[in-house]
Image 1 (cartoon, rainbow, N blue to C red):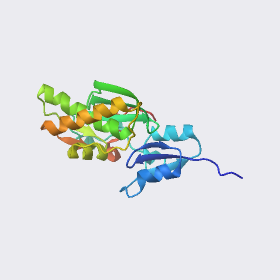
Image 2 (image 1 turned 90 degrees about the horizontal axis):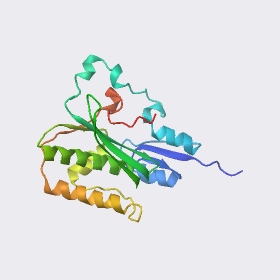
Image 3 (image 1 turned 30 degrees about the vertical axis):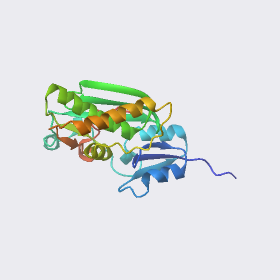
Length: 209
């Protein structure tokens, strides 16, 4: 009997998303500290899971929503800030990112791309926010839930292995432009890690649960 096909979701890894084979999944998690991943028996199930939180599928407690947080925990959030996030249908696949007011949810920017990765979206969202505040001469803090994007911004280098081809050409142009911006500009904006475990999903989350 043929082995039933599985699909693999990586929530935390070199690149995140839904992968068709175990070998592809391994490339994202091998050597990656605290990698979060799980297999599913159907593509639809895997895509739905990727739109949710890893903790909902690998046995940890479900993360709270901001509205249900205690006042004590809410005090830890810097509300005068912007939150950024990205989402990707498949990885690579259709990608989008946005930046919203952490307190009100007002959307400052939103970009969509026909083909990209979640990590690239998180990176571009951070740089987009930094450039916006640089233009407006503001040192507003920026929240992200992506350690990878934070590392790429610090290094001023996007380390994605997304292939260069006709589908990704425009996105790679934007990535190079973002890298050049980081190399040529200084900024005072604190880049803060959104603590999903304690605060629930980041306000810029696309809500694909």
